[in-house]
Length: 442
Image 1 (cartoon, rainbow, N blue to C red):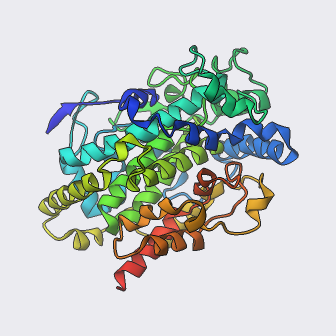
Image 2 (cartoon, rainbow, N blue to C red):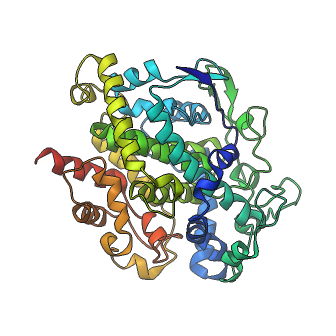
């Protein structure tokens, strides 16, 4: 099926995809993200802010090497291709389905040109849009609320939303203030939270081919003409929110490749640092938001309008995905899933890469949560659906226990003891690997 392409320049468009659908839980999500606004009040918070810029700049310039899945030059080229977003088919993320299944999916779902695309099945497009139409608006709301207390840069938020910041004596524009580029200053973001290409002491420029095979410089995705982010607040990362949300959905539809799809989400988020568009904190915020919202959709939380009947919609999409992939691959999904020579074929390498993206080495802010594991079944039991939907032989309690056992380091800038904060330390790649192994042995 051919459709007109929904090409998202700065992801603000996602805010209007399913507008009323995600308003009810917005305050909870924004409150969870708001820990960034109080970092300047404590020594540990100020250290985290300082590290955020140092780490981001080091990764972007190459001064801080990473165990990326491709050699450095190729990985930067991948970051240029990752700058494009197609919310209807997520075809640019399908390479993590593996050599055989990735090709099978893209044969049906791909871009024709910058205006048109095909989809694999309407049911798959539907769940992608329901999911990204939930998390995308939350990301966009956060950008402007934390940037300058508005909904779009100019319209003030409600008094209720402003209390999310003022009730904890937080401050807007935390990055602009910390890095001496306050909103409206020369060369700063007009609406606050200037991005690293504006605040970092150095920006590495590089060229490569974008997803349409056009030679392009990374600054063209920062200052234009391909994408102009100079007046688009940084936190949280909308691309990362989309990337994780979409890879979770595709992975849940193809559980044989779920861990690899999760890793693709991490790579997609990391691309935003490499290209110079986002800080490590932006990426961590986007990941946490995507996991939180997706879990609540899967749990069919009544506060989420898009959650009504979501698991049934996922079941239909999975059935249709299986038909599409097996028709193109010529074998069962399980057989084709094993045919992989891609950068995701080495579990040790993928695990090592994912591990560095878990915290990006940022320092502890909340000592209390850093001291021990947090029990997922107690704090955020719905998180288990991130595993049970892929591996239904697991009970929700078993899934929650796996998530607890595989948790990453605690105490990060989001991990304040709240349910939302807990999602920031979930290591979903390791949890999915363990769940997959357990399910296979039953």
